[in-house]
Length: 497
Image 1 (cartoon, rainbow, N blue to C red):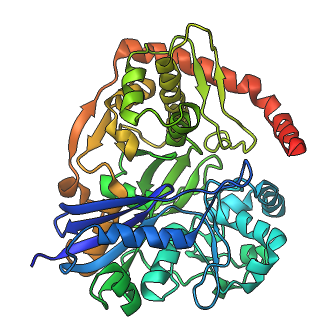
Image 2: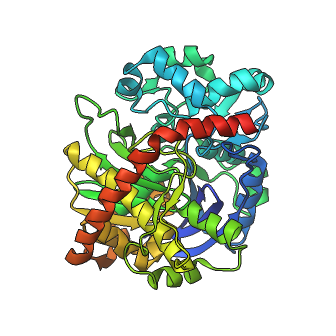
Image 3: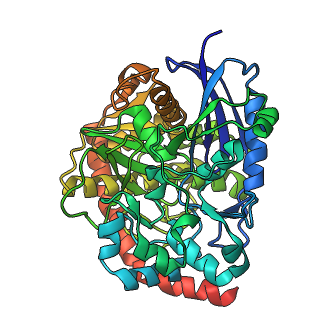
């Protein structure tokens, strides 16, 4: 029986189980969705037990799993799950998208100044784990004091599978508590948040296999007990591995949100404070990252909340294709959960500008696609200003399925867009890490060339690119015009609750 590798990708909206051959061929794949609880406007929480139930269902849907020789994991990042000594969750996970810890992020910025980013590569933003932990210490002291471990989503799955609490540098470096250059937990930051070093998991390389599948987990999953479980890496690191994001190739991953990443083998002497730097899944490498808070989730909101769930994404794509470039003068600022790169404004909100009674639904949808593309363009411009070469964009995630979106992005960025064979590249990256850990393949950084070749190319159209250059100027001017209003709007929202 041919050897296979089982991967789990715990995303923001769903978990995906994939069965690969050691040559990277997908034998079977299954996905199960789960909800995000939003008890307040800026809050976003998920139930870890629901993650586990969805993972079990997805894996069992793959069929015969007797050929599985190794399991590898990847997940969303920055969220925090407090668990007791038996591994039981003490509260729902405050996921990356949650914005409640704004004041705590500002406090960390005041306490450590520029040294915070210089040491950790992270900006003082509520996205990251440290502000969430500080918020939990103050507002949920029972969970904070009872916690034996504070785990990120992938780490929680690893604990459920093996009984071992572990993490890897790619996730540790998203906590804002990891000394990026020294490669260890940052003691001063831990002390400020109120943690002991041993309350965060021990850190292993992404290809390590410190645990094996427990008898109980194996029984739940229908997989042989005792097989090794590779630590794996965060979803963005795995995606970057799966598509070879390095040497001028920049990854744009669009799903619930959009991430813009490329890898480097060395950190610059001075870190640009507008960019994020984290450890890669490839030992000794680093990721330079930027991220939007919302992108695909805006389309989902439009589909489900505004249109009542009566349209499919394919329907929305067809409607948007009927609208001309510029969406007949309709502009979207896509900041539905605050603005991250490049603006770093947690008070920012979404804005549609230019509505008339002549607008159609397709114009509304196209304005969403173009608004996201304009913000990605801003991120690419910042990379270029920081002397990062951008020769092509490789698109992954659910957004890469849309030819219209890929063409809009190429035109807006003035850069070729390539689509790889495997667009859901996080699972492939996790598979590559497992294969490397088991000795099935050699160089991790070049594996994508044979495992995930380019299957489609979108080149930018000069006339449309010139039009989008003007739209981009108007887009930025719109943000500058409304930026002074955001803080007052946030205060009014808080007052009205």
